[in-house]
Length: 451
Image (cartoon, rainbow, N blue to C red; front, side):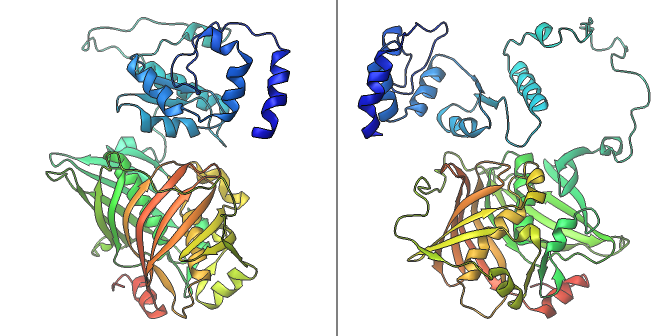
């Protein structure tokens, strides 16, 4: 920015400044800005060049008793960053989110602020709509209904089975088990209900990717306020039949003295209610505390000193190695190598971007991030994820990311996933892969056997 500062200052000197009508916390000082500062051309020159003290500004507001923050912008990037600089009771709400309905997101933001004590001018919001306020009883047992009358039963509404909606593309219901502080999430997977899974074929078998099982762990952790997948071991592959589907259960155990909870992912085929459930993954969930997210400098892209690796014909080569990736999983756009590090640019295809916001991290996007390692693997074996360790999700709904993969040893990687600005999306301390054969997948398709 240095070459433009002098000319920028001359332009500013020709402008007329006015004192702000609302308080402004300065990103230059990290504290409340004075009118003299904001009306000074030199202040804005320094604002361009000096460090952005966003964290200090959030800390200053928190020190003044501010606990509600509304982000006015096209997405929730600052909302995610702001949480790192405020106390646990602070609430951060973006007024808009990328690829989501603007009106619905704005109303959701107002509602969240309202329930956290912020004053909302509801009369202005409903002006001209014909809506009016009604008195509600203050006594809990007056036995009067204040909800619209009529049938409220809808097909597929799990609330009428005594369950809660899981609100996730791979899961349908969630329930807290009575007396045990355990949680059970359930769902059903099939090629009819989730056709994009048909794009993940390993050795001729449609296989739910290991990143999909990790996504189930993310959702389970969210249900019990555990944001770290401490460990997830994939015991048996979860395959999908050509016709029909599989029932899936994700069970979260009660916390131990340190707050850690066990996790198990199991399934059984439709129509096999008498059969035993097959366990596909087991692990441990916990709260990460104030752990620093793994990231890297993505402001210079491609990374300095990294050599480009051609991705031409990559997916044809993967098919020869046993990975039959369809369009949704063909997200690898570019790869670079620097010593033991691989850098990759990954994006979902257009047909999958709309659904990305419903996932923590779309399994196809994370799976495509691992394709850089397959490209550089140098092995004739078909290797799939086996053990995830120290996995934290820092931002949700990404449709394009930049990834750093670091080789820790034979078949072992660490991952740092960021968005185009360098903001953390996902951290993986280690991911261990191991080979799988067509015979092992065939045994799993029959509902037995472990890999």
